Amino acid sequence: MSAARPLDFDAARADLDATARRSGALLTGVAAADAFDAAPEGRRPGDVLPRARSVFVLGGAQPRAGDWASPNYQHMEVTTTSDRIQTIALKMAHVIEDRYGYYAVCVPPGVDRGQQPFVSIALAAELAGCGSRSLAGPVLHHEYGFMYYAAIVTTLPLPANRPLDAPACPAPECVDMYAEAGTTPCLKACPIEDGGCLGGRIEDARVAERRYDAARCATRVQNYWVPGFQHALKETLKEPDPEKQKMMLFSSLFTRTLWSMTYSNVSQGQCAECMRVCPVGSARRRKQ
Amino acid sequence: MADPEPVQQTRRIKEFALAAGADVVGIADPRRWDEHVPEGCRPDDILPRAASVVVVGTRGPTAGAWRSPDHRVMEVNGYDFRNDAAIHRVADLIEHDYDRYAIQAPGLPTAGHLPPFSMMLAAVLAGLGTRSLAANIILNPKYGLLYYSACITTLELEPDPMLEQDVCPHRMCVESYRRFGKTPCLAACPVEEGGCLDGSIDADGRIDHSYYDRERCVSRAMNFGINSFQKALADIVAEADAERRDTMIHSDFFSRSCSAITHYKESVAQCFECMRVCPIGRAERKLQ
Image 1: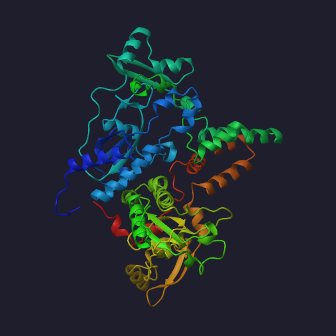
Image 2: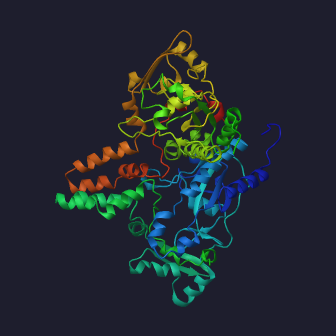
Image 3: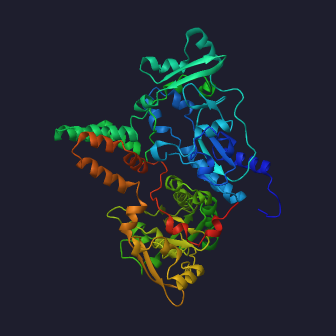
C-alpha cells in the first residue's frame, strides 16, 4: 500500500466483498459504526474498538438444502453451526489490517458477562441491509432466508449499506395465511399460547407485534450444549443413590451434553422448527 | 512429481505455507533437538527417519483486538487456529506432491502438563524467535508474540539458521532496566508484588536470569478454561446445600467456564499484560 496514494474506499469495499465471497460468505454488508443507537451503551462498535467507523457483516454457512431434507432431525443438531462463517470473519479481519492498514476486530461470537453479546450481530446484520428481523426471531434474508452471521468492527471507513426498506418477514404467503387463519407458519409451529415460544401480530403486511419466550425456547433449543450440561449435572448431583447417579453420569443424555461441548461440531441449537416452515428462502432449500 | 532439489522444494514449501495463512515459516534440522531434550521427545521419536521440521507461526489476535478497551474481546477471540490449519496444508502438500511422510507435531500434553513436542523449542530451533523475559514466550523479531505449529517430515529440506541475536530484551527494555531496574514486562507483573515475572539483564544487554511463576500465572491467565471448570466443578460437588449448588451450576462463572472449554473460539488464556507492553512487534500492531 502506498502512503502517497489516498485509499479508494469504494474499491476497498468491492475488494473485501469479493474476498469474503471467495472465502465462502454468501453475502456481505456494511453498517456505519455510529448507527447502533438501538444498542445499549457498552455494546456498541466503539466499545469494542475505539474510533470504529464501520461494521463489515458476513452471512452464510446456513444449513444446506440436504440438511433440511434429512428425515433424521438429529442430523441438523450435529452438523450446522456458526463456526464456518466465524472462521471466514476471523480471516477477513486480518485481510482488512494487512491489505488496508486499518484496525479490525471480529465481534466475538460468544457472550460477555451476564450472557450479553459484545455487539449484537443480529442488529449489525439488519443495519448492514443483510436481512430483517422475523416473527420467529432470526434475521432473514429475502432470498436465502435463515443464515448465520459474523461481524467485524473496523476503523476503515467503508461505504455503508442501509437497512432494508421492505422487510423479508412476513413473506406474502404468511400475510395471506395470517389474514385467513390469524397465524403464520412459524407462529403455528410454536404457538406461545399453547406452550410454545412465539406469538405476534401482522398489520398492513408488516410485523406489528412480536412475542418471544426466550427462556422457554432455550430449554427446548439448547438440550445438549452448555445449558443441557448444567441441567444434567444438576440432576446428577441431586441423586442420592450412588448406583443411579453412576447410571446418570454414563447416560446417553449426559454423554451427548459432553460431546456437544467439545470439538465435535455439535450445534448449539437443537430446534429449527420455526425456520423449517418459513417460506423466506424456501426456494433455495428445494433440490432434486 | 515436484522438483526433488532440497533448495527448490524448501522455497516452494515456504511459499505455500505463507499462502496458507502462516505469517512466518522456518525449517529446523531434527538433529538440533539432541542437545536440548531427552530421548523420547525428539522429532525422530515421533516420526521415524524424520529429516526436517517445518515450523509456522501466526499472529492470532488482530491489531484491532489488541486495541480493544474490553479485555474480554481478546479472551474470546484471541486465537483462530490459523497456524494449525496452515501446518495441516503443508503436511498434505508434502505427502501428496513429494511422497514423503509428514505429520503435525503434537503440541498438547498427553500426560501430565508437558507436551510430547515443544512448539516453543521448535520455533527457536527453526530460527523464528528466542525466549523472552516474559514467561519464556518465544518472540519473533518482526511480530513478537506468535502462535506456532510444526510439521515433522521425512522430506529433506534446507534448514534455516537459528537466530544469532536474542530478540529479547529489546534495546528499549535494556535502557529501561538500566534506569529503573525493570523492563516493561517485569514492571507489568512483578513477582515481588504478587506477579509472575522476575529477571535481570547483564552488562552486555542480554538476559542474565529470568524467573517465571507458572502456577501463579495459570491462576490468572486461565480464569475461564479447563482449570476454572475443574475448580468450579470441585466446589459444586462439595457443596452440600442443593439450592446453593443449583445457583453455582447456573452462575455466570460456571457458564463461562463451560463455554470456554467448548470449541466456541474462547481463548485458553485471559491475561496478555506482559505482551501488551512488550515493544517487540509493536510496529506491526500500529495501524490507522
